[in-house]
Image (cartoon, rainbow, N blue to C red; front, side, top):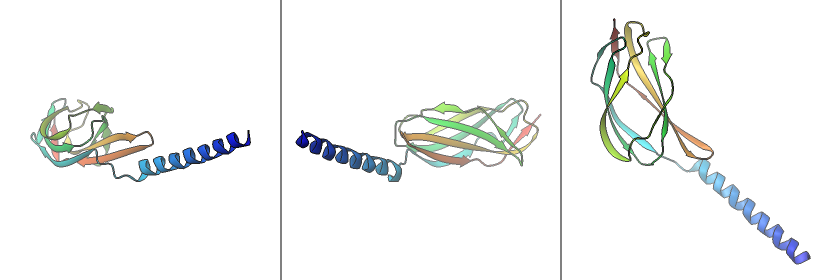
Length: 138
């Protein structure tokens, strides 16, 4: 009986040490799910409710989805609902179409996109990408 308790004690210690190593790895490892190379506006002037086009050059290294939040900034921040994006892995140059909210006042804005990647059960890696200024007109 004593031999079994000793074995269980050692097994518990080994499992606890392994769990500590795993959590440490998850916290410290430098995950890089995506790299943004370029963001270029195609339509610098957009009507309210119109479509903003921009080109994104990126390299995606992990096949995981991202939560994307877009905000329009002109001194006041206008936030749109969060969406989910799962672009293919590899390097791509794509054109993205975004509908400008019709209630957005006429002014000059920049768009900020926040990408959140859940890379493991305890860690989220976040990227923020900003555009050049564009104008929203009536």
